[in-house]
Image (cartoon, rainbow, N blue to C red; front, side):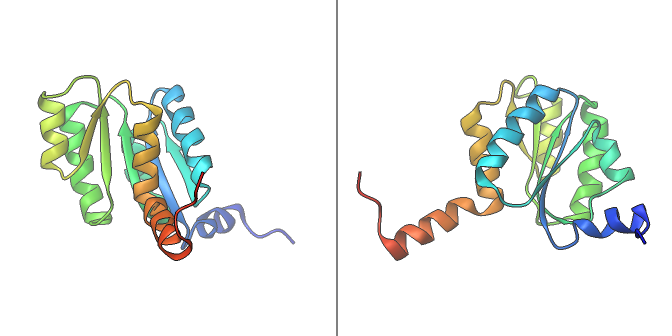
Length: 150
């Protein structure tokens, strides 16, 4: 007999690392997905709006949150406050159109990093690798086995 759907979904991510992304632009989600697949650790969970994360938070261990929807500074401030209570040590990055404005100031006051569009593949990769510890694992591997010669 199949177990109930809610039970299967609710426990499937428990204990797993995940990156949570709220974005309106599906091309940004696709860029993150490509970089994430190269690291191949954990699960990528995408939402259309940041407020959907509050309504239906993930059950896994959140390693990184990327907020890329245009909710405005007031919405970002409230969501960041909620996220800081829920995941106090989790890195959060807000993606915006321009730097130096009210949105960036709200993000930084809320303890988040801020990047402006367009975000390059290298920036996405660095963000993901740092959050998942892939950089430190590669460095530890190099210390153990020595750098590879080319």
